[in-house]
Figure (tube, rainbow, N blue to C red):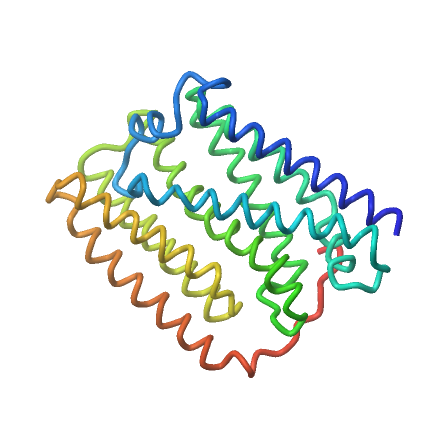
Length: 270
């Protein structure tokens, strides 16, 4: 139990650190740009509308609930309690993830798009490791696991997946490699990737929370195309609408077959 308590403290501490860095970033205290300014500077065809980024509030709130709940139960319950089984599976990987997002905020706001993309890859990989260990979505582990741990991490994983694709495009824009037809074609490829990943994760992993985040992001991309009003990119609207339908159908199928989802054993140290 001592190890579980130590990990719970570590995860909560690194989360608080990441949250503080993010808040400082919003005030302009640690960067030369705001989030909106740097996004506008490296805008691409896959850049979503500004309102889409409000999902960060949900990400931070859900993670806050998770780390606080984990911390409290680590000191109140025994090692057989569900979240105390999950904390060792998160291990130090979650802490590494939070340090990576802290560094990402700093590098992104200081116009280091290449480094920030590399840090997003670290975040994506660490979330993949956590997802694999917890076998998300795993509803038969109970409501506490589902709505405290898995919901939080699924929303986060879905958004970081989208952020990685968008940051990759921004990096190419910063290098001067993305303009005109190349921007359109890459946007096709990245948006298609988001659609495929979202559909596969929902259909095969039953993770409807991940899928809902993908739908939100695609909707943001569509709304951005309308805001910009550039007809050259309007074909992305049709692709995005098609993608929303595909992911939504996968979600509906998963919900209808929810009772048939079997419990998946945790994968330790994988």
